[in-house]
Image 1: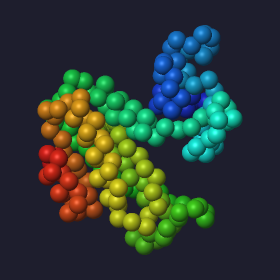
Image 2: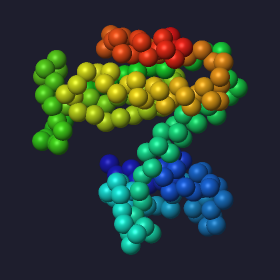
Image 3: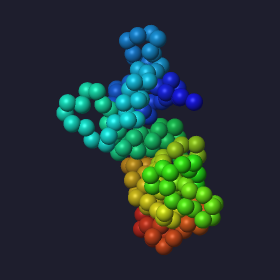
Length: 187
């Protein structure tokens, strides 16, 4: 299924192109109002553009600003949960994503008996705060401290008094993550 038509309504996709109106409500043409992006072409250019482009490609390619996307995800939580709650719970999760071909970076995961990726997600309720596609050749919690550092820092800038708990399976209870939590006042 080609979901480009639906994705043009996603306000998160306008962050990399720095549009001032992420919902598209102020678009000039009536038929485009409520659409975050113009249509299939911008989405396709964003999806197929390399990480860096040269000056000649500047106006025909869309380069993703991952840091801006990451900030926007947390901003969405802060707006949705305003005012600050007394406590929030961040859930860390690594889920096998089985592969059905010879994709680059594939890794055989013995527990499930198949080749897969092992994406890392951090959520707070229904709010997705981090999503990282990763190969499966590492532990389930690999990279979660780096993600938690930026998420917790952004949350604490807006809500300095909120109590933050991190929840995850046994892989998330390793020494590195436990020490980081103790050092940063995170349960």
